[in-house]
Length: 496
Image (cartoon, rainbow, N blue to C red):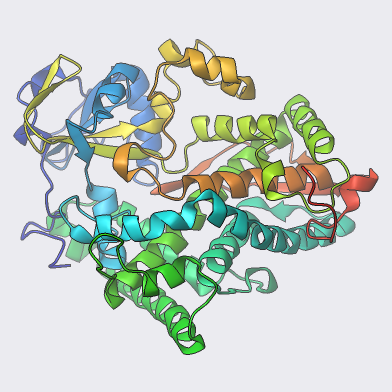
């Protein structure tokens, strides 16, 4: 941890808000603040994001919380976030939650500090891997992985069993990024239990979140056993990824996927290449970020589809109309599922699975003309509250309504009000990959199944830096229509 922490135990670069917000006293905070421990009354250590949403509703578009003597400023108002999106004045801040992942991801694309050169190097080398041409090349593999999911759900449907939606979406998205990006098969659908990569990943994400709820001086005492488990989880992730890279090197290369780019491509301007250590960090970053958030987005979308029969019927009718009798929908046909995409966007609005991003001031400035910030001062943007701002989304902002993403409605909203993938130069590099994969999978599942919800289920959200619906189970029922019985990768027309 020495590389990423100061002697206080806090991630390098951590600044309590008193150090960067000269008018901090004007920003509201929760009542019942206690000496030494801060704003802990009514707080739940396992749901810090949802706690912050409750405070946000009460305190307004900018507020602060104190945890064990350290002040944090939260923002969500549309005018504030639009100002923070100005790349000339603000940059990504690698804050507590993200910095806690640096022992495993180091200077990977997601966790690199702005001054670290490997971020720009990796971004420039890997960006072509998400071009339209590259995406079209990934599409057949996405279909092949989706077929393994539908085979699994077909067996459940035949037996009248419910399926574990978050678990199955995690299997699906892990296999998709592993195969398309790295030519590796984790055999997720052949396993009775999650792959060790998933178990260790969940462990590291959970530990990173727990670090935020424990005073730094007490971490060695209170999280000793958890720290040992986390170290073992990191070792396991490193070992798994090293084996993936070893196999690729032994095979003499793949077919131009992300791993090939990492191992073989030099920067077009400088001729630099990624080091072996950075390759490992980038592979871990892509495997984690490339499946954890997408599995959550699919799970939330399936939850809402199972609860909103009119929405599901409209989406299903679109799939039937646009794809028709095409056995294997082609790459171009996925983008034509405009209403299905709206369902996905509306799910991401209510529950963006990466639920916050931090921004820091490049120089002394005044946020939205009202809040002075010194250079290096930072704030955490609460994306779910930005997406629920009634001034932007209306008085029914808590209601699920995909028509909020009708083209006319989107044009009528101010910019920077929908940010599920972050903002600016360091927004998620794989967002188009995730959106294509998720839209394709929702289309395939809608065409094949009716989704029956458990009437007694009430949405609960698990937090482990990312968000996931807890305990969501649905019962898939095969549709009787002929087109619904087709295999997603059965040879057939690729017509548009």
